[in-house]
Length: 165
Image (cartoon, rainbow, N blue to C red):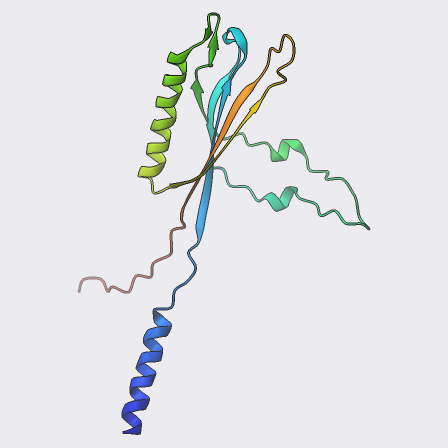
């Protein structure tokens, strides 16, 4: 009887251990849209994305009370040169706000977001902001939106199947 209970306990332990859940590992991707709010249509509007991998630690210094050296990372090393740039339309033209341009930008963004979703990405967060002085005769400004996507990292599957004999 002891052997049977020991066998059941051992099998149950192996089953529970093999079915233990591992915290999922995610990867993220950020897509940024910059839409010009410069009057007369002279601004530049773009949708920016990249697949370039960088390690932020290469450009990070730790500041302490004892050590306050400034970060001397070379800007040329930080700058990404491989990215996708999709042209978008400006919010304004000579006649003022251009609703057709906004609708066109929405269609472009919808296309990009749908492609991301089709490729297994989930839209996790959106952050927006406007940069504009807003004072007398203000001639500059942008509307920026960052779309943060996430998806499960691909896991390495072990191939336990044998080839055909």
